[in-house]
Image (cartoon, rainbow, N blue to C red; front, side):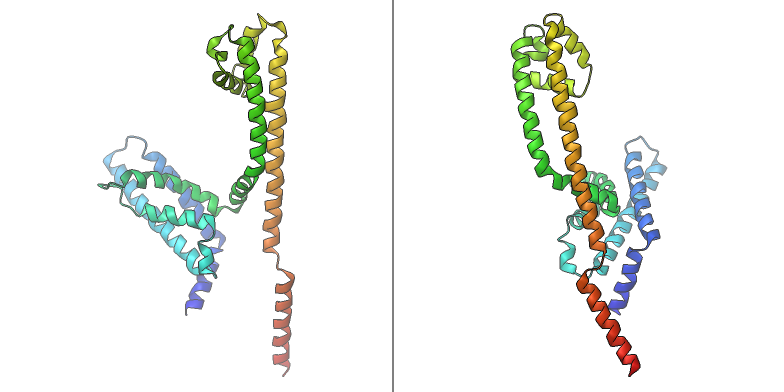
Length: 261
């Protein structure tokens, strides 16, 4: 009976309509959280409270289905997304009203929107790719910091007398350079220094080339490369292995022999 129930729940879990229903409830949850940031009438507040209970119960039901349908129960909680979903659902059971944990419960309800990532495989691959790319991105960020530090020191030495608010010390100079890198009115900063140093445009253009163009392309290249590896891993995990194919062939041969007998 348990195996039959597990099989039925597994079919339900993999059903496209059920998956779309989960996505729809997550979207409704996000809209409900956003609605509570406005001033609402008492009747609307009552509706949102009922809706919040429904969403919490639905998420608990959906998580229970996934757990029961899982073949390896111990391995269920070895997956990061399953742990995240469980924490969000369990803390969502905390009553919001008249509770010392009310603030925590409200904050966790905001994070229910992130369940969209654990439900949609494409989003899951994207997040996993970003996490796996972090070690490589760390070296790029370190190199970018070195460039920032060098240019900030040069800018502080050269332009501090022109505008101490922007170039007074190396810390504020790095903040100014971040503004230049994001193209936030950077030409005003450039023209101000060019009135004293006409060739200072070289300083800005070379900095923009190194940071906004070169490093940004390096970051994109690393992330895209890791995403391709994740997609390949996802595709390979869906394909049956040679051992599984051989096992299926043996089972078919045994079934054919039994029928022949």
